[in-house]
Length: 447
Ligand SMILES: NC(=O)c1ccc[n+]([C@@H]2O[C@H](COP(=O)([O-])OP(=O)(O)OC[C@H]3O[C@@H](n4cnc5c(N)ncnc54)[C@H](O)[C@@H]3O)[C@@H](O)[C@H]2O)c1
Image (tube, rainbow, N blue to C red; front, side):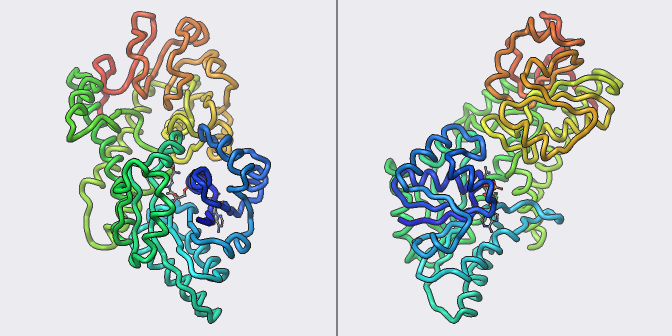
């Protein structure tokens, strides 16, 4: 299958590379000349474990190409994917300007029958809009081609993106014209060899909504567990015991039940917001999902309050923040919980030293400069003279610190473990002030 991937970001690049890995012929297109130049040189512009090697291997075998020009690869393609960003607009809805721009380019350039696949996360009805734009452009050019627009949302997780794509739980495809079914079966067969039933065919609207429903459900689990954690702190229970007790029920399952600093990232906040916007527009109040966002905002505030309450006055205090990316295994810092915490700490007059194994450069670029915000070369350097350590992202390299060294480097031994990683080290008996989330040794705070 000859595929054009329009948008070579976290999703487009992984999708394109994995499709090439199983033998498809893929051209990745992006507006960013810098990104395409790096990729042509075999350098992966994002951090995603295993991706750079896979890119090089497939580029060497000439199954994977990179270009800024859509016209040439499109002329040969059977399928064109739209994998551009759909960021949160000012009113909370998904901003479709990049998707619409690609649809216009496709309409201006398509010169054969083909399938256009909307991979971006888009509100229900967007495939209809893409179809209208393409048809309008084809009409304007007075050409007739059969263009089938399909929805094919992506469920990969940054940090595990290759494994998720290569061995998906399911592949969702939304079609109004099922003549494209064979093309999708050909495309995805190698990824679902164990069970071809994993290809879930449905109508386009159901497919578009499935993606939002999945992210909203996952965000709900996190907010629910954060509220349970709050209750644990008040009642002297331990959220990790409760998590195991709840998650061992097969109807519930163990994943996505971790209390922490609130959900963030490039998908959950914007997708929950977009779904709420869609539901408002259609006069359906989503009471549960509204509460999920409220609980998340409260959680982000509570983790700051833990630190603020301990010091009473944060002005002039020095706080080391370990973890700036929104989760381990990625350099993506969009809507990272560290952003909110650091902003609150700076507003309260603290000095902040950030560290992240991969996300530091992106964080510095997105957050901007502040006279009291600096970055450290190593995790330990960040602790020099610090009054507090806040663990925000549970990267492997933070999992087993040398606590003697940590204690020696800090001016005050206060550890705020926002990912519940350090309970087993018994930091209190080692002379640290230790707080985590939802455990008996975590102090409960007024809401
Ligand atoms: N990041 C994730 O983990 C993830 C997971 C599932 C779904 N999604 C969804 O996938 C979509 C893409 O997300 P992402 O994280 O890959 O975004 P991204 O910002 O990393 O990548 C988007 C890319 O599209 C390029 N682009 C924009 N307009 C273009 C155009 N006209 N022609 C060519 N390239 C263009 C940008 O330069 C950028 O490189 C979003 O809708 C997102 O919600 C993301």
